[in-house]
Amino acid sequence: MFPNIISNMKTIDFLNFSGKKALIRVDFNVPLDDNFNITDDNRLQGALPTIEKILKDGGSIILMSHLGRPKDGPTDKYSLKHVVKHLSTLTNTEVQFADDCIGAQAIEKAAALKPGEILLLENLRFYKEEEKGDEAFAEKLSKLGDVYVNDAFGTAHRAHASTAVIAKFFPDAKYFGYLMAAEVANAEKILNNPDRPFTAIMGGAKVSDKILLIEKLLDKIDNLIIGGGMAYTFAKAQGGEIGTSLLEADRMELCLELLEKAKAKGVNLILPLDTVIADKFDNAASKNNVDSGKIPSDWMGLDIGPKSVELFSKTIKESKTLLWNGPMGVFEMENFEQGTRAVAEAVVEATKNGAFSLIGGGDSAAAVTKFGFTDDVSYVSTGGGALLEYMEGKVLPGVAAINS
Ligand code: AMP
Image (cartoon, rainbow, N blue to C red; front, side):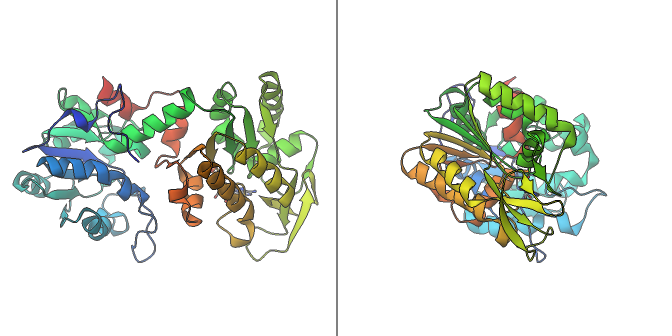
């Protein structure tokens, strides 16, 4: 799954970690249920190849991460202690824990680490300095290890203390972990070397979140499928009736421009033919199917309909490269998951027939996980915002900090 050396990236393959203490920024921002059980461990799994290589070399590891969005310092709900048990099982190592990411305990435990041992630090975002990119805070963290490794693709688009600023304290000892390398390699493969036909599937709530990516992709793709909440702004812009469906009224002009641009660039832009409507935003709502642009005034579209499923699936199955970002409907509700599930099934079938399929992080990754297809697609990204920004052509601070 993880190619070891990406030609122009300085990965951990460039160093033997024997006797070294590796300070690794990981993205362990995993979802937890009310009893603090991890409901999706994709991000923990993603860090394993890097951890295994360093331990195998004879190094020791200090892991640092954020979890959630704590507002006012330490909060039990956001403590990384909740991942220690599962991480110990996954790594087959008794993971130690420091109840602060800086300070005496972290220093002592890091100093005492022996080859083969792993220490996890408490949530970095218990300090406001982390997100502010505070240099003094980054310097304190840097003292804990001999080598800095960034394997946190999910936060690579943020210039935080532990993701970017810290790298300056390791001018000759900073490396990309395998997850970062794999994420970048897969994004590059899609952007630079796609087999054709190349189809992008865009969904989710808002056009505004995806607009930069869509514009960038128009130069590269053959087909653009648009579903999810964002499709209703297109329908309205084309003169359709969308009832109380999601609408970004200030983006209607933009939707018409996109339709024109796609036409000019020879991209086949495919919108839903029909939609599943509901009389309220509720799994138990009354349902009906109507053609796109024909939604009664007090109903809302919550999924694509069967004709759209057929049309989208046909295009997907004929594709050789697929990029999927955003669900086709409110897949979190069982009664409105059908469109997203059908698209996922078509992506799986295309992959079986040799297509390369990249699932953008966030909700599309959650959908693929929910349907149990994680191993049946080519790659599920761990980065939502980071992947979008990378594909939009932005330089990610977490990547730049290692490259500079
Ligand atoms: P995004 O983060 O922009 O990819 O949006 C994902 C969210 O969009 C998911 O939580 C979906 O439930 C939601 N979504 C998708 N389609 C619709 C729709 N037709 N109406 C309301 N929400 C939607």
